[in-house]
Image 1 (cartoon, rainbow, N blue to C red):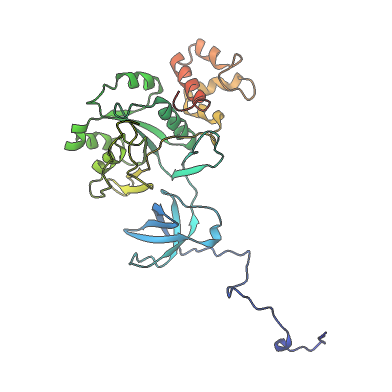
Image 2: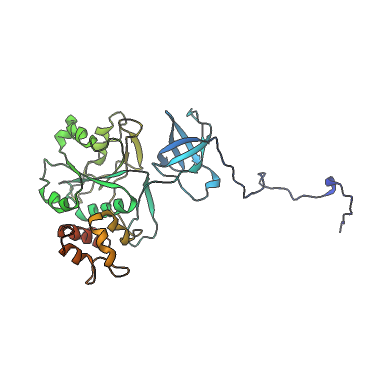
Length: 336
């Protein structure tokens, strides 16, 4: 066995070769203070298209971010080739803190949480009044996810030429949700897009809806220069539409602060990730009345203080009914 004395030559000391040929691991991470700011527009198989100043740049996530994923709407920091030229690739080295997040699970018993959109101000819930028939339970679930994620809801009803909106408006009137009613003729002549556009000024709005309701057609009308494939036909037997949007995509609307985000059509909207106690925050007129509720109150039990709060005239009984209906949504299947 070879032994070394006090005066060893460094050349005599053997070092184990690094088979991978990369640098040794370190806990010190670069700060990337000179990284450029960008916004994620879409994600496709690990490649992220980002807007950096006035150009689109293709990027990938840096290894140092670990399992943290960037999603559409994220504000990110990028380094590398930011020219946006063909066959170039930048690196996302930092994901900035999010102001809001829209999440969902595949089903209520699915533990895997899917983050759909980040930093949106508003959630436009698009539903057809017919062909396919409206699904109130799905709308309720989208509302719960919006309230939980910090997004303001907007209800967009399409195909009013096939059925009147009265029943649906009566169902959601007590929630004070802004709404727009459109029909096919208005979509074709641009009137529908103009009316919806009034609610999008100065905001980032994510559009979500069941397949076949006209969501992507509406987005196409809002942003005609960013054409997506038009809506597929609705199956006459199942009432389901084809998925015409396969990944979320952020599109500029008016200016730097106006964005619409088209998301894939959904057939279900699981709420396994939702803490029911946070839904009350969307009802400020009722939230103050929960001060006397028992600990861990579900707000739908005999000892709930909200009944006395409403009976004393502090809030409209219809508002309490709406809260409890949304809370019960998590316990029901969407087809109920």
